[in-house]
Image 1 (cartoon, rainbow, N blue to C red):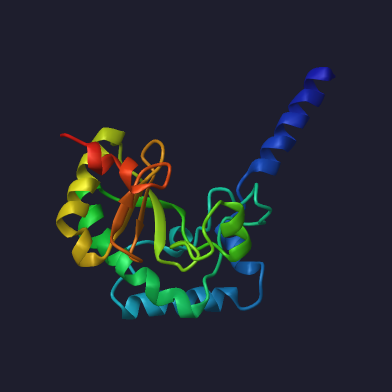
Image 2 (image 1 turned 120 degrees about the vertical axis):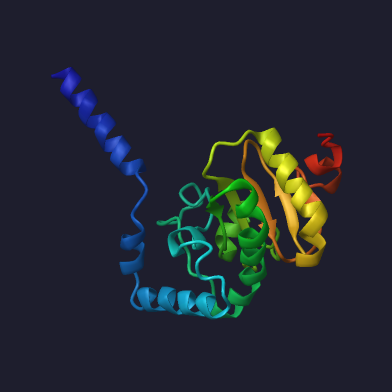
Length: 197
């Protein structure tokens, strides 16, 4: 009996922590499917519609649950859509050919979520310039840093790209401004500055 109760509690806790489905989020608000379709049409028109699918592109932040959001996706306002286009071009033209496909961990953050996640009020995430990514293919942190830092050195200025690194293989790309930083958000700690090989 005790074993059955423990198992039921474990299963309930696991179900409570399970991520809701993207389709549940699409259906949770009237007009959301139409708005997502409009974003896809806009990205197709700007020739970046095939870089990332909407389930990836609309991820808000990995802290969505602890920040009190019901879903890990958010719909950015239309006036911000142009901001992500150069970011997607850089990912398509430079990042994916070098490290393979990527998944989004964090994209546009509405103001409350951005503040909860520790972002500045006018952060690149709050304005939809930024995507935090992780490679889908196996790669070491050292290999990732070497590859992405070389890309940033060669092509980052031309694309106006900001590059940041977090722990592990999570990294940040934005097209708000050309710059780079490390896990403490300072340029001096960018692994690109100290990477030797």
